[in-house]
Image (cartoon, rainbow, N blue to C red; front, top):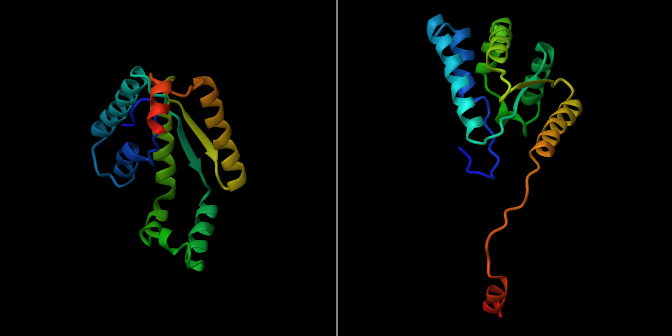
Length: 159
């Protein structure tokens, strides 16, 4: 976890366990239910320890996902992002949408709410994410650290 004062970014991380496992029936229902509780307990512990959690679900449409995958294939500079397995996973689109809906509903808490951001339009997506982060930072009112330094002594050492 990031140390106090640092910002960390996780890309899905612990949520994959309730998304892919649900879509592909990799775990029984009782295990999935336990995983939702474990996610909420983990995040609640982070919040109790002073971590501010901002969860963003960037939602794109089926058509937009297709367009972006085609764009990746057409542009040699974007091909590194392409994964052929994504084409197979598109067959489970409705199942994934259901799994995301459950994850957002079960794991959006007062201390760690989800923000679902329409992401077909990248300009809007970027603006919305920026506004959420700016508002969060305003509420947090972060300050520069104030280390205890003997500034005159340190300046003398630099001469």
